[in-house]
Amino acid sequence: MERKYVCDMTQGNAAGLLLRFALPMLVGNIFQQFYNMADSVIVGKFVGSHALGAVGSVGSLNFLFFSLCMGLGAGLGILISQYFGAGQDEFVKKIIANAAYITAAAGIMMSLCGALLAKPILHIMHTPQENFADALVYMRIVCGATIVVAGYNMISSILRALGDSKTPLIFLVAASGINIVLDLLFVVVFQMGVAGAAWATVFAQIAAMVGSIWFGMYKNPYLQLKKRHFRFDMEILRDSLRLGLPIAAQNALIAFSCVALQSVVNQFGSVVMAAYTATSRVEQLVQQPFGSLGTALSTFAGQNAGARRYDRVTAGCKVSVWIVVIFSLLMVAVMFLFGDKIVGFFVNDPEVIAIGGKGLQITSLMYIGLGLIYIMRGMLNGVGDAAFAMINGVTEVIGRVGFAYLLLMLPSVGIWGVWYTNGLTWALTGAANVIRVLQGKWKTKIVIKTAEPYRAG
Image 1: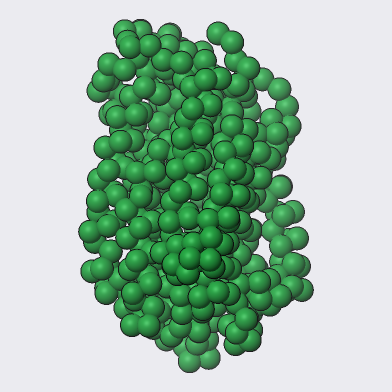
Image 2: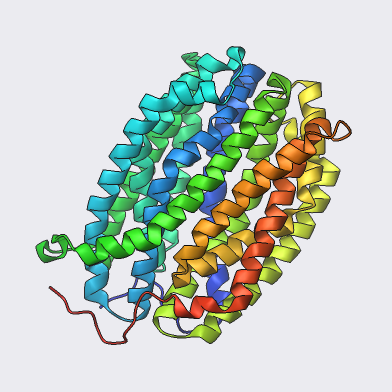
């Protein structure tokens, strides 16, 4: 089979493969964060800090509703990468075809939940009255469009599992431009407020999803499916749920811990909310190299696990750790030198800028822990160690809830406990991931139990 738009990562230099695969994802993720940041900058500058706080307060909730779709996409991506690595092309196509059913069901369900449950959830989070109306509008629009996120996340997972990280990049860059133009049009020209920012994000996501699916079907031989591939397969469903649900639960638990911390932030008032929103947006950008490298390592580990090349899995992990350490130390210097100036891109309020700048300095000291989470989690997910994903999520909940409770009880810590909580949680969870990898149990978690081709039909 022609493999022009795929990449076999079971052969060649591990470092070179990882970097070449991760770079397009990094560029795409940075553009994605830029259009997420565009929402915050335009809302903060043209609508106000209260509106910025409202948008930021629902960020964790959005992730909570996206988590099921992201988990299922990751589960199917693991299956595809391992069977691709084992050379079982026909079954790879069956997985891709069945992914359409799973994506549609999960996306519709979460869209309905997001739209219907927005108001009671915001009440539970103690969202301040001055932020409530804007937060409700933004959440209903963005969470109500979870089906779009599910579709784009699924097609991206499929393409990346096959070693194609460039196609999602092309359409993410285009979507970024669309989002920024629509942000300016809806918010500044039409004065639609946070609703305009939300709709701009949704339309940009639709463009990225449709473009990726169309191009993938046109160019990638694994997406050129026949009628026989679309027969529903219970084995694929079971395997995708076995791998994807723990990852979805992990994402949901992480999102829950972030929601719990956001509810603490909300109690400090709109100034701290705006500062926390700004620092969160900056840290989302900082995390992109970690996330891109983690996703690259997941595909690398999945393909090599399917081919039983355990030595290459370990080599890829070691290379990734060194990259994380170097980048983390660089970011510490950046945040201590320019943290307040970076926050100033989002808001004009001097108090918000001062608080946000110090918050970035605090969390930057724990960036290495954050990077290790992405790297080790990517490797473990790639080889199919799904059970640990749930443990990983529980660790983050314990960290965020526990550290927040303990630190905010100390008068000397005060509002800074919010940022210390995030940093210490990263350190705790990163250590747990490293221990799991060093134990070596991941070698027993490979999905494919036989080297024989899976019977087609």
